[in-house]
Length: 127
Image (cartoon, rainbow, N blue to C red; front, side, top):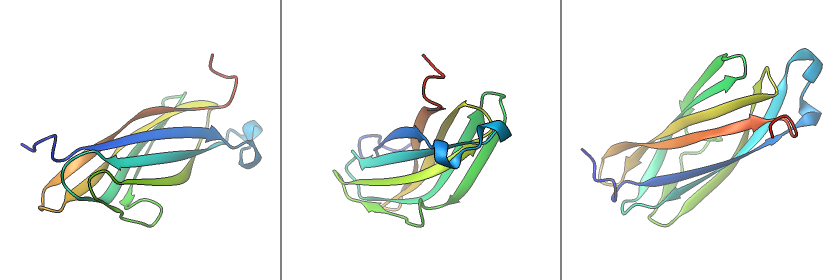
């Protein structure tokens, strides 16, 4: 069992609809999302890989796994943050994303940082 105060990563996400890249008539809704990853623990940690679960309003699920984020595997010392922007496309005007980052602490401990679910939504679709 890992000590949660030693290995703690906080993740925040903000999504934006990209109408210029979307084709609503063809069921393609494109979103950008900006992720802020903060090391709020006591150990330096490196982000090794990611796992995303993207679900549209029709319950269609896409899973994405891969090394790093935007071609990087950032190393975060305690108190440091890393921010990046990426994108995703779904077939409906509303959906969600959630996932996790697989991390490696400087002491060799592997742990997972959860990315809480966030909403992908065309403006004025949700109240």
